[in-house]
Amino acid sequence: MFTPLYIQLKYWFYPTGNTPAVNLFRDTPTAASGQANTINVLLLACGDPRNVLFSLWNKQGSAEKCPCHRNLTSDRRDVWNIFYHLFVPDRALAILQEHARCLLRASESWETWNSSPFGCFIGFLSKDSLASIRKFWISYSTEHECGQFEKKARNAISERSQEISEFTAMHGVRATGPFWIDAVKTMAHTYREFWKTGVVGGNAEDLADLGNGGLGLVNPMFAASSAPPGDYAVHYGTEPLLGFHVAEAFSNNPESTQTARTGVNSHVVNVAKTQFKAWCHSFKQYADNGTVRLEMFSGEAIGLCYELQLQIALRNKVDGLVRAYVQPWTLRPLRLESTTKSGNDNLGSFTLYNIIDSSNLSDHVGLINVLSATIPLLRKSSSSILYHESLLKASETIEKSLSDVL
Image 1 (cartoon, rainbow, N blue to C red):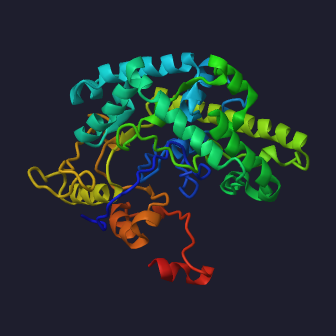
Image 2: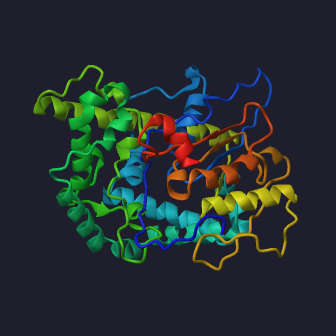
Image 3: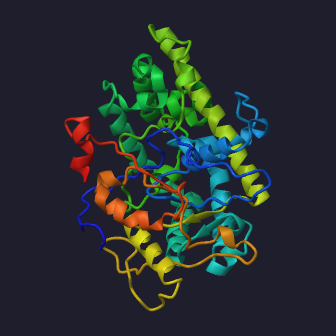
């Protein structure tokens, strides 16, 4: 293996991002007018697609961006519910199940997926990844499968809610920028309300939409994970608002009283909904125009990087050689598949990257392991860039941080 092998005694599932979305193209030069500019980006341990959505929204010209209407339409509201809520209305669950069944029909084989409408803008780097993700679609697709989650999920969520009922969580201020001091109490409240009600910030609109006496149904997008069957593995720090930029909710809204905090709480959720709508609108435009393609991989990130190095160095001539395995404690060899289509070579697999974002992967495997795995994958260009984040304190002083992590 390319990283130290360890025994994972507890698996945690991170269904939503725990840091505000970033613009992946923020340091990338803009192409000259009329010139094609394909940008290849590698995202490691990214968790959810917020950075992709936010980056594409930023890349659009301001005149093309979606108008920021405050209210989500019915279909977008269901997407919001499915994406971010622990509990969902039966209408939203039915939409998720129907869409999962469409994905299952399209993914009956490698060939059927690549020839399907989904395959035009979503591909997989290996057949194993498609098979692994297909298992989750199966768990989303039927009432029987979804019903298996109900009791254990509700018990786990209730226990978590009780544990944090008097707890003032500070991590929510990451999303509030310069207003973090004014936002501490409100963001701690939205975190507690999320786990208490199962909807973002416990907002009244989404809570009323749940039905079933405000209980709704367990969202299988959160309940199903790679944890052992029956375990509800959503990480205890999960708070969907962490992935958004909600500073504007506090710019003219002091939270000095309980009544004021209630108003700000609702405003924070509306800000996040507005951003989510705009991001989705932008992504749809790119997908409809055929100017974005996502390649998915399910497995261990460092192993993937070394396999990509090998594929690029040997120009895909590695048949029959076992170079890495999909992840620790598995016997499934990591075999990448090129999904490059004729006439669209620039959007294919196995290429050097303009941008690599390693999230906070170094917190788990060490910065040296991340650097040695990723730097050879950067395109030889002055504008190529590797991004790295850390949520851990590396040293007692800032001056010693770099030397300590290396």
